[in-house]
Length: 186
Image (cartoon, rainbow, N blue to C red):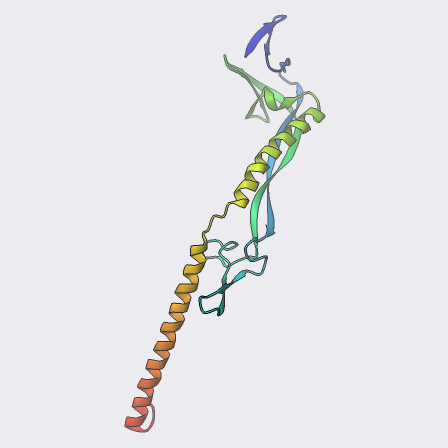
């Protein structure tokens, strides 16, 4: 909400109106990609599956693989860190709802992230980063790939192995018939 005070337009929630060429501190966040050990395979890049007959097979971990890429043993996530910088206001936009300040030739920000001191800007940047990091942690705790994907992989590759063994047996029988007929394989 804007109001007129001593001939100057002020924002009600923050009793400060900046002017062109004022040096202020801008609170923002920056995105940093981080890695953690895969919570499914614990960095081994494979899982051990116990089948119904208590035999064990290993499969690639679907938790840390992506698309056609093999398992990596880690997962990546976004971390938001504070990023405070001093800027010079080079543009001011005033509407009936808010005041927006321009700096660096094009960027616009409202008064909630602009501060006269670095300390206040760092406090706000920390609040912003913590808020976004909570969301990222929620994403990490949600499992995006179901266990059925892993069991399907076990089923599929075991079926392929059975088929390949049957093919080998069939081809060996054909070779053996050819040996018996001609005495040797041609």
